[in-house]
Image 1 (spheres, rainbow, N blue to C red):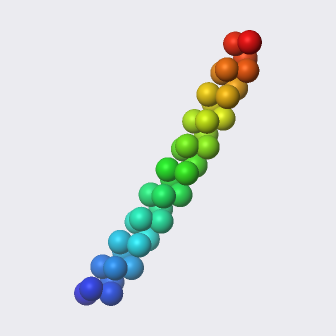
Image 2 (image 1 turned 90 degrees about the vertical axis):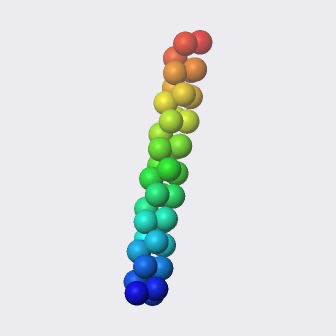
Length: 39
């Protein structure tokens, strides 16, 4: 049980980290395009 729970926890953690990284990159690109478009 502990082994399966550990594997599930790490899988969820990696999915969350990759999702956050993609969101941060998308948000930064959107902000950069907005700033460049206003000038």
